Amino acid sequence: MHRTLSFVVAGLIACSAAIIVVTSGGLPERVATHFAFDGRANGLMSRDAYAWMMGILALALPFGVWLPAGWLAWRWPNLVNVPFRDYWLAPARREATFARLEKMGIGMALLSAGLMAAMHVELLEANRRTPPAAGDGMAWVTGAFVVAIVAIIATTAWRFRVPKGARR
Image (cartoon, rainbow, N blue to C red; front, top):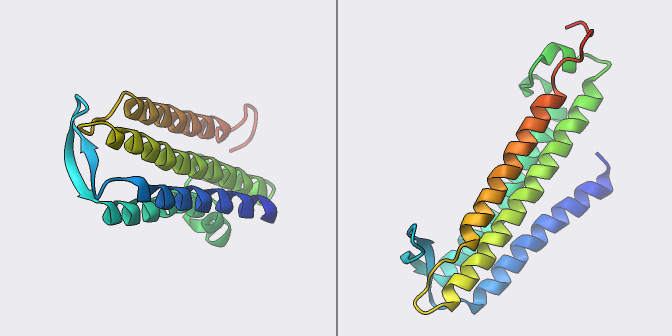
């Protein structure tokens, strides 16, 4: 993958985490962080603990998805697990396969960073209400994330099928 793209993606992930940490300062000292199905707050934590937890998660989750899918495949190809492995890791297709895995990892990393940022925005909104309560946004954000991840997985599985007429 192009080095510039990698730096841009890493920068976007870092910016997402930084924005989460910085905007956490506007939260109350006791932050409502967990909500019942009906939207009522039923879990609290300190603002500092929330900022640390979300800052770490906003970095660890995206990089934890991207690195195994991208960099580790190039480093240790024997750990790559794709359907029809022998076909896709044949010398003629190996580079393209690793590039495809890295693109998938980047997509999932950016989605993960977006999820963390969107959930943080929803939490900011929930804590502005008196008493703190979650709106419908959290369910929509989570649902959209699940749909996007399923789409990435389905697309990846589709792309890693063996073309008709090809020898396995």
